[in-house]
Image (cartoon, rainbow, N blue to C red; front, top):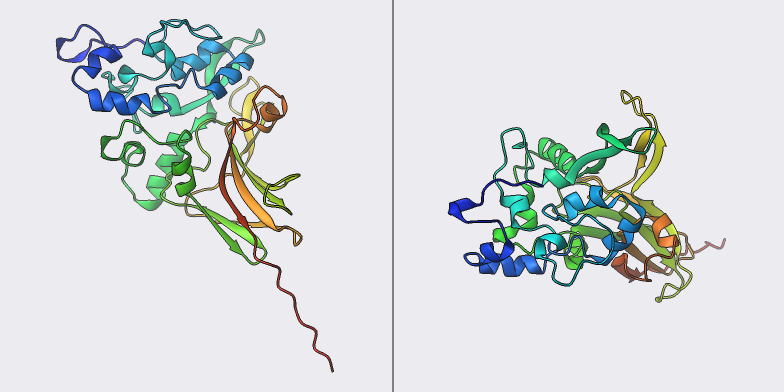
Length: 305
């Protein structure tokens, strides 16, 4: 990412320069997912299977080192994640669309590749990340005028929210045991759940013991992908052929087997295939958002004549 001149005549956009006047904001940012967007363990493993330059342009927009692997010990913060200029640098009128600057990294299509595997453009119909599009639809449907920052940066909190704050995810999900099943819905969420990275998904699991040994998955909420042609794009590329995620305002009922004694809802940061690959240490990519014993099944008494 190439940024314009720094504000107020400052010589550069370095984090240290911003901290001279905005120390509280920088301190909060250091504990955010943005600060470690590139060095995060999940991303580091994922990048071994993808094109590093394509991914790093959002996970560390001001980085100059686009290679895989660990960064040198003296690397500046700009190599480690999303720093101040990525969001605060002045944008031109062509980029000043609704949802900016968030849309720059949270709204883009799947890569369209040529026969040589080179990216030629991004899809205009199949979105790899559609968070801003989902938010736009939610605003139209509800009349709510809140922006991304109203929820993710309350009172200017530069610690941000999202998937690196488990408590925020738990607060966003409502789970109600009801009539032999669960009813799932979202609370104060203006986009799909889960949103962001297309590999994220949610599972509803049951077990006969509280440790969830040999747990069984009874429902999944996410997107199922397939490489095919998506009109009017002539070149085949990835797209979603199924989307079972939670939508704001639409509760989802999940039936549970009558033998289930415990249930939980798990948020997955990577795809099932990536989890099964063995590349991720156990527990690294899974967040338990809700777990509880289930009410005992109701038994109907037989009337004797």
